[in-house]
Length: 134
Image 1 (tube, helix red, strand yellow):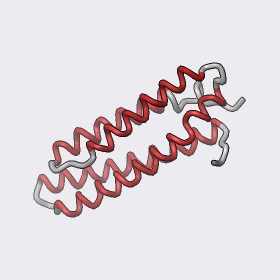
Image 2 (cartoon, rainbow, N blue to C red):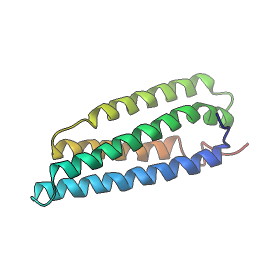
Image 3 (spheres, rainbow, N blue to C red):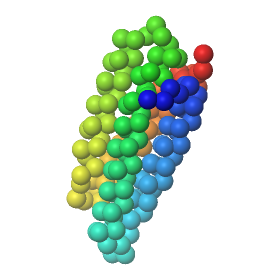
């Protein structure tokens, strides 16, 4: 695996988060249109599938680099970092399983949870206070 500096990893992960947010916005727009009778369930299902694929790809990338990058930033915190990463991966799995939904109200709930997850991730894991080059 390519070794990234913490600042490079931070930039890449934040860019991925922005793309996920754009996709979530599109899903919410289509859910609103579907509820108003203007979009098809198939259109929404397609966009949710795209979001699911992007979320899976983001999680795979993040889960591969997060521990090494955090250790680069704080080599003395191995046990704490292991626990943080383990909890974080668990959150990913829970959200991923919730993206298999049938109702627009469920979609809105999952999108809200995902947004909160990305915001918390940026606040506590993906910040320049945490990830800085040595």
